Picture (cartoon, rainbow, N blue to C red):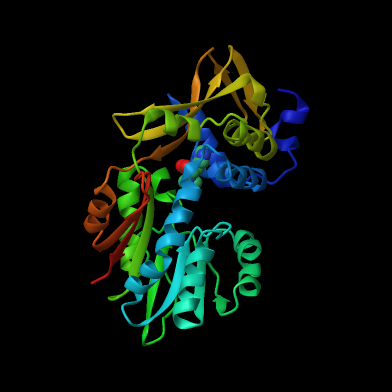
Length: 331
Ligand code: AVI
């Protein structure tokens, strides 16, 4: 190993969480990396681009459901009371604006509580909402809602005549393994009180080609998003991946009802990860599994919500039944 690549000479502070994930995933067989590694600044920008791609129907289909049914969603969640709206993994909160507008129309003002692990994501995403939609007050909460060690969410008290509507939209639940999804929903349930409700957005099973195109677009944005994970390891762990020596691969795993993303080594190659003092030998065709995106059958999300302790109340879908938005109540 050269001096420049030695752990001692690597001057960037190594994030232990990233180092542990890369060490575990890249030395396992089959090799894998966690999907949360996608979302550095460049990856988040690429994901924003993905949501506008013609092939990536998810975002625009869910937004259309909100545009058509936002009033009904907010009305059913409120049941005559005032509503405050919380959101897990708020991101750019772009679709949420549709629901916030519906809430303002109904009750003139609304408190919006975006929850995210990253304070900076919350800052930039939500600062402008108050200016854009008069009547909205933003109360951001920094919280790692994906790992809770059984602890409850601390969202603060809602007012006496106020109910909370918690959003988890954008098919984000689809990136969790089924047992993790159930655990997450149970945590959410435990952090809500009687009368509150939960809105879950799920992508539905559909024709294989539609699914494959959504995860392997013609412009190559999803491929760049996938490869960006290697660029991130180069920067943060002093690795020397040649991102172009790995092909983007999206496949439909029908048996497990999920799209899988992989990075496939185009030829036999060696990669070193300086911060881990690790050298990896990739065979030609060997893959790194980077993401699963589960697709739900009609009724499956409602069953999951019920298993997590919610009472499913209503489901809205688009004409083609490509995407579903499920409202469930805490009783
Ligand atoms: C964030 N998540 C819901 C996206 C999805 O569709 O599973 C991530 C993504 N991966 C590739 N394209 C988009």
